[in-house]
Structure formats: C-alpha cells, structure tokens
Image 1 (cartoon, rainbow, N blue to C red):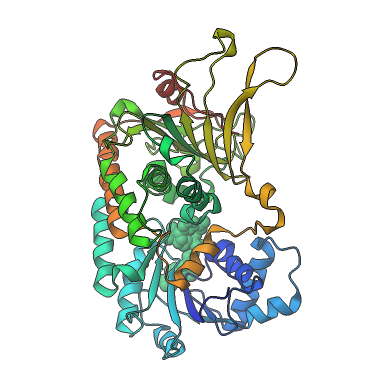
Image 2 (cartoon, rainbow, N blue to C red):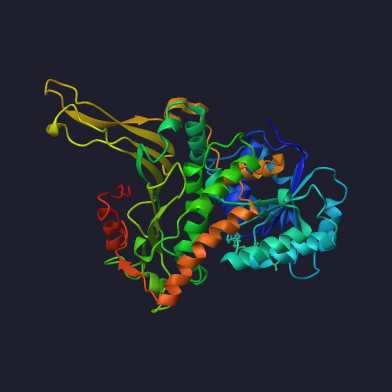
Length: 482
Ligand code: NAD
C-alpha cells in the first residue's frame, strides 16, 4: 500500500549512512510500489553538488549497496527523477533559503532526517524553525548516538523540545525495525502458548548476544570516546531487553508500547561491579597488520575503552524477580550473530530416569544472520534404542514457512515508511532514552572512578575469559556464538 505523498529531506544525504542504508532502502520501497510518484527526496549536505550530480551519486550507491542485481533502467530513472539536492550548511546560512523555497506550501508529509553528526542536531532543529519549516506536522528523524550520558541526552531532548513536540521526534534505533524483533512481539502477544510461561516461575534466564566480527575499522577515534556500553548496550541491547521483558501493552500503539518499555528500564537493578566484564580485542595472530589490536586500531596504547561487554542484571518486578538477564556484545568475535535466547527451566521431575539427561526448552530469536525464531523441544530419539531423549529445533523461520511471500525489508526502509505514516511505535521516546542513560551512567562512572582497564580477548573468540566465569558461577553457559 503506498504511503501518502511526502517530502523527505535527508540532512547528511551524501554521507555513509545515507549511501549505504537510507537511499538504497528508499529505492527498494519505490520498486515495491510503496513510494508514491509525487514523493520527493531532497538530499541536503555540505558537499557542493547539484541535483544532477546527486542523482548520479545515488545511482552509484544503489548499485553498490542496493542488493538488487540490475534494476530496470526505467524504474531507476523514475526514482532518480524524484530526487533533488541542496548544498547546505547546518551551522551557517548557506542553502537554507533554497531549501525553504523547495518546501514551501507543498501540503504533503514533511520529514527531515538528521543523518549528520549529533553535534549538529541542535543547529538543524533551530534553523528549521528559523526558516519556517518546523510546522506542527513536520517530523524529524534523529540518528544515534542520542547523548553520551544522562546530562547530554537531557540537554538534547531539551533543545529539540524547544522546536518540536515529542510526537514529531523519531529517535531511530534500527534494531527495532528488524522483522524478527517485531515478530517477537507477534509470538509473545499473538499466541496463547508462550505468555503464561513468560515469567520467573518457568524461565531460568534470558541471554542476549550481539556479536560482530568487524573491529573498529576507520571509526577508531569516534569509537574510543564511546565504547560498547554507550554504542551498543545503552540503546540496542536495552531495547531488546525491554521487548522481551515488558508487560503486554493494552494496544499496539506508540505510547502503550513505550510506557511498558519504560517501566522495564526503571525496574532494572543497578549492575554490581563483579557482574560486568569488559574486554579489548587483541590483534589477529599472523595478521597483525590487517587486523591490529583494539589499542592499535584506535591509536592509543593506554586506551581504557571497551570493545566487549558481558553483564548480568535483574528486573525487580513481580514477573521477573530472581531471573537473571545476561547481556553480551563485542567486536572481533567468532561470528556475526545477534540472538536473544529465552532459556526455560527443566521439568520439575524426570520420569525417564537419570540416563535421559537434562533438557531445557530454549526459544531463540535470531536477528542476524538468518533472521528467525526457533524453539528447542525435547523428543524421543527415533529408533529402537529405548526411551532416549534428544533436543530438536522447531523452526519458525519465516522465509522457509512463508516462502516467497516473506519479502525482505531492511530495518531502515521499514522505519522510514513508519515516519511517513506517522507511527512512532518502533521509535524511542525521550523519557526512555533518559531512563536508559540513568541506568548506564553509574556503571560507566564506576569504571572511571576505579580506573578499571578492560581485559584482553582473542580476536575471533567468544570474548573475555571472565565473561564465561560470570555464567559458570551461576551454573550456566553462554550459547555459542555461531
Ligand atoms: P558521514 O561522516 O559519512 O556523513 C556526514 C554527512 O553530514 C555528510 O553528508 C556531510 O556532508 C554532512 N555534513 C557534515 N557537516 C555538515 C554541515 N555543517 N552542514 C551540513 N551537512 C554537513 O556520517 P555517517 O556515517 O553517514 O553518519 C551520520 C549519522 O548517522 C551520525 O549521527 C552517525 O552517528 C549515525 N549513524 C551512522 C551509521 C553508519 O553506519 N554510518 C550507523 C548508525 C548511526
């Protein structure tokens, strides 16, 4: 179903994110017939170029990152014809009059995507208002990171609130745009089967792993000021935790869902120092030049920033009291893999005797690669060997179940369409972001006060040795990163 006609201005429209994700994603929506022919996409960035040059750049980006073999030439041309470009300075006056002119009285949905460094978010908001483009139904899309602690997040919320209402602000966390993440909600709240068991009585623990194989690459300088806690845990992992742990909202609408997520964050226990492990990756053996150590990659031999985190936390509420939540994320790990696992308790008594072994149902929700949901169930091993039990996966991977109907839609393109539709359900509200920082800040301040240094871990491993200790102490294990 096509969305309403819109004008989408992409500030930073020549940047890495715009070229890799936003523009190819918009083209895929165009190909799917979701982008109406009256819609316009206006790139706005400091790079000096005209609309023809921009169309050429975008065609190149689609070719490189679009994931479409050879798009039909007329379709591509029709899409490119909907693009414009304005050279603009977020901090100065250049280009604003021209943009204002383009946006005058179009009567369409107006959205402004802030795909620029966060230091420019305030400048953009202020100028949009100054040039009369911050009218009541304009929407702004704000990229991560949203602050680097509670104080800066509050300041940024305060700045944006001067020019826009909360229902005009779309704070992106692209994890929320993933198909499986939404499917997690469908599985939880669309079935009778899971929700009765979704609590401390039946769930042994929950683990969330987001593992990357890449190192910091060219982003070393930025990353070293941030680290895994700020870059991944405070936003992506906490959002996943919220969706797993929240109470059923009364309706699937933005505030009902976000109210429930906020309650989860506010009920999180503080993390004890011995429940959180930090690491920095070592150089890859034999490939020290191509894949240097974290400290070499960021150019600081004494850096205390972590590229890996493993932690244990609890949610102090009626549903989850006593159930540990283990979170882990890192760079240069064994595989690129993001997975949430709900590990259920063992049956209270085994009627099959001691030889049957110990079995637990595990519901694993895989975000990448091979998005899908699998339920591990225990059955009898087929054959004449007697009553021997084995665990088999009950696969709910939709690409297999739904075949060609399972259209692949990237997180960014889904979220941009939600902006145009005016649906904020999958975007973070200001108070959620602040609550997440309020939980994260004392952890980071603790490391700083104690001068803690992350432990080294091997490139291509599952992380630091003590992250495994964290689990073993509790008689549990991380699921293998694969
Ligand atoms: P980038 O450095 O590749 O691009 C920056 C863009 O901003 C360019 O188009 C540049 O022309 C424009 N710009 C810079 N200064 C400007 C000014 N004064 N006035 C107008 N335009 C100006 O950055 P990026 O990687 O595309 O990241 C953009 C935003 O998205 C950042 O907030 C980043 O944290 C976030 N983000 C990026 C990625 C990614 O994969 N690249 C992922 C998640 C979030």
